[in-house]
Image 1: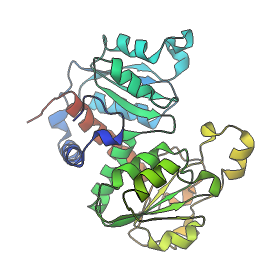
Image 2 (image 1 turned 120 degrees about the vertical axis):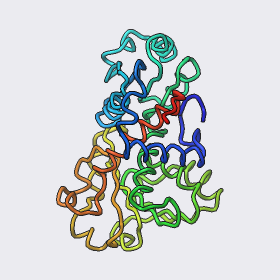
Image 3 (image 1 turned 180 degrees about the vertical axis):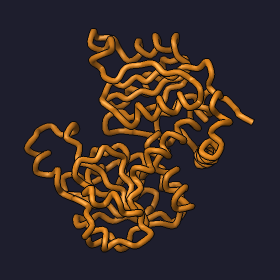
Image 4 (image 1 turned 180 degrees about the horizontal axis):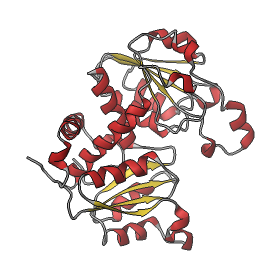
Length: 307
């Protein structure tokens, strides 16, 4: 595996399988790994707000016996003084053994990885990549569905700016017989580089529709996303599109009994709270799987093996 993980493409299918097998073992035998990272430090460099991802990384390292340090916003870092990402990560490399970075600018974690002397994990860069959310999604699907192939996957909501969507599409195209259904308003369709450079070029079957109800009965998996206020240039466009799709009990009645609903969170109102009690809604379980797959990734990048 590469020293740093910036894109889902940095992890091969075989490496992904090994990571998920390790995460499975950690879930089954947590006590075996409780001191695997004794004496190691994870730095969380979050130049953009986060709850789940930052705390998931911190929980992962703490459960491995390590320690954490870092900041939760650019305002509390030397970025406010004009320090570059390259200089920040050079400094952090003297303190920590590994770091996770989130940044609003696309490509910033790649710059960090080029200048760091420790492994860098991209925890989200703008609308670009979010590889550990992709690992979380894949591990959730494999754990609950028992497979990552032969399925129809629906993506609904903000498909233009949603980095979790782009990363998961990139990963799923590596598996056999995966078909995509994209549900979004015209203004938030998947970017051309996903449509043309990945799906069309690789001859991956997909369709683009505007009504969720029309396709729900055909889906094995529904990946809901919020319309992200922070990616819009004006409030008017956001307000017009923010409630484009709301998944509720009535719509869920159209879906198959074994369809799963995932969401990278945070949720605003695109999934009604009444859906939370539906056994097909697995987005809170998704969070737990995310911690275990991050534990596996930290161990792998630090080259720590536990018998």
